[in-house]
Each structure stands twice: as C-alpha cells, then as structure tokens.
Length: 88
View 1 (tube, rainbow, N blue to C red):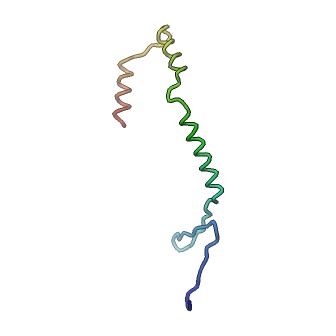
View 2 (cartoon, rainbow, N blue to C red; view 1 turned 120 degrees about the vertical axis):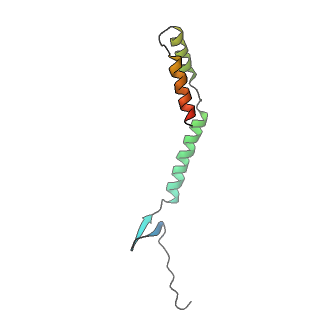
View 3 (tube, rainbow, N blue to C red; view 1 turned 30 degrees about the vertical axis):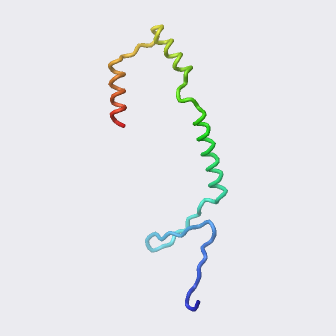
C-alpha cells in the first residue's frame, strides 16, 4: 500500500484525544479483570446464601416488646413507613 502508514498501538493502552494533546491510558489487564470478576461473583454468592431476615434479632425484639423494655409510637412508625414507600 503506497502512501499508507500502519500504526499499531501498544498492548494494554488506549489513546484519547484531549484538546490538542493525546493522552495514553493503561487499560486493566485481562488477569486483573478476571480477578475482579471472581471477587464480585464470590460476593454475589455470599449475598444469595444470606437470609433476608435475621430471625434471632426479630425474636429478641419481640421479647423486648413483650417485656415492656421498648415502646413504639405506632403513629410515628406508620408515618415513617408511608414516607419511605412514597419516596420509591
């Protein structure tokens, strides 16, 4: 190809033009991305195995309510619940 010059960019870099200058940014290696994905997948699996509700805490709160150790203002609780779900 006469008149054409080929340019091969170094592996692991991208070239972005910012104003009148070129900026090279190193891209994460495949190994780095794979390690990050393993960490994310591990975290997802742990979250899926965890119960949605801590039944021990629920039982403790029920006992405290029954013993009169904690009092609840039901009007305030209802208002808070309405505010919470109205904002979604």
